[in-house]
Image 1 (tube, rainbow, N blue to C red):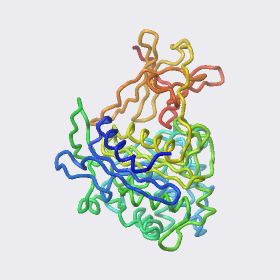
Image 2: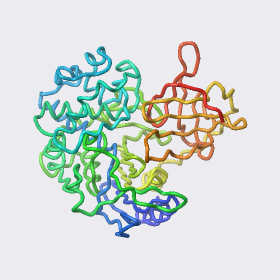
Image 3: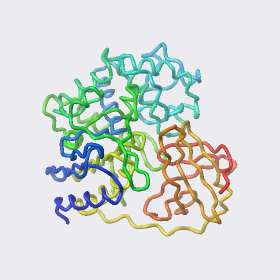
Length: 445
């Protein structure tokens, strides 16, 4: 077993190799907590990252939304399986059946079926979430309610609005009073004017090895529930500690039974996830089952948050460029293998390539699409971000590692996508990045 202090060298080197200007890592293992920082919060100022630097945690914010809603369930003021329209009679969705049937449980398990990747700019006032949800009739219903898991940011925005109406507070005030303050999370904020007066990281775009500050936070206030929280590694460890041990500086905001319920699998998820609880996601590391989340704020600030409850283990990685995805995976794997003692995940031998025409094409879900092309007999994959100003990740060569599942040819340890077939055996869907996308068109190599 390695000493946790070795993580500093790994973080320094890994950040350089991944082109991450700044990062911070928090680790909890067997009751001991450590925080490590590297690099700068902004290449313009050169201000070093330290343990107190705020980063956007992105979609790990969804676990706070889930916990806030479960607190209302414990109060007796909210039922998970009651139609959302009973709390929001003014709600309008494009599909009248969905409006009548979608529940809070559907929202917290990414199974509402309407367009998930959307950020409807409605300003920074206290009515931002209300105004955004007021436009949800614009969102197409892609799947029937409850049919599939497809990662759904807009579902958590709607859940946040339910929380506001039921509690009588803004979403941010509800989370602050019911979760952050009881847990002593005094370095976590939603609103830019709370962040700007404190040490904070800014997002970067890296082009040809040169990092430049992106002069945007990448989200609006209507996305608070789905991804808007800023936090420090220390505060993220307090969040982990509460779910691992129940420890709280004030009155515990949730019972042990409710914390367990939030982590208990509710349904099968879409790759790269395996199952989903009430906001928490599950993946595997070999035979070990991880309870986790993580976030990506417009490829500007990326994070990981991974727990292994039976080992009293948690690690959080906060970064300020798209390279944080690779750095986060590297840090998490190192911790699991060198601190917890889990075996390394082995590479999977690639299978012979099938007839690629079965799979090639463009698969779409809102402003995200996935393109699979045949390049001289090799399958290439790319996520395409159809949002001006936000570059798409580079394409990669993919190989089949099981029936209808692919992994990057450069790293076959874990599948990255899975193709799904209809009743006639035709490939019509793909799971990629937790989204379920529909096949729309053929794409030539």
